[in-house]
Amino acid sequence: MGGLGDSSGIIRIVPSNEASWEDLQAILTGPAARCQCQRQRLGDRDWWYLPVAERSAILREETHCDDPRATETIGIVAYIDDEPAGWCAVDVRSVFGRVRGSPVPWKDRHEDKDDESVWAIACLIVRKGFRNRGLTYPLVAAAVEHARARGATSIEGYPLVTEGKQVIWDEMNVGPVGPFLASGFVEVTHPTKRRVVMRKDLSS
Image (tube, rainbow, N blue to C red):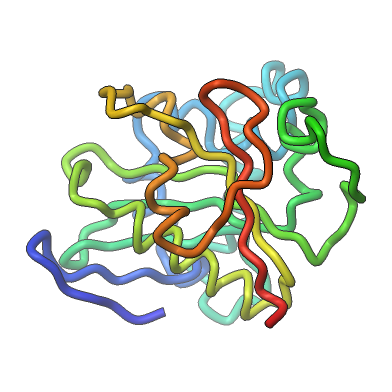
């Protein structure tokens, strides 16, 4: 996916199968280490009862880390000056069980939840020490291109409205609104005070 430079360093973003498993685990620290990016995919109930080791095993199988020739993967990994710094879970929307099963993203919407041409950005994690550098902006932009290259006709995000307030990173794993706006997403619905459903059309 290439790289870009700014005052924060050289940013390089790759499909997660082109990253090492050790690099991905370096990003997933704190609550993210316990989650292993499985809550959005499995849904709350199945995720809650699954041991962390099993969540990790599922993630490793899904990402195909350390296998650059793999034809499938479920996300992208960002590096800053070759240090692992960020992760984005991006895949077909229907595979995210928590998104599919929650009433929030579907409020005031009537569409096929199983439409495989619609992708979703379900999680954005920036490693401690690399935060507040704007890394979510290139991550969202790269996720869009990742989905487009794999046949998506549109892509969604479910960012949090911060209203200029400081929000802990545990809450921000869906990302803030700004990076989605910068990548051309538009609001579809505003189902709760703090959550927005946003979409970008990729068909043209």
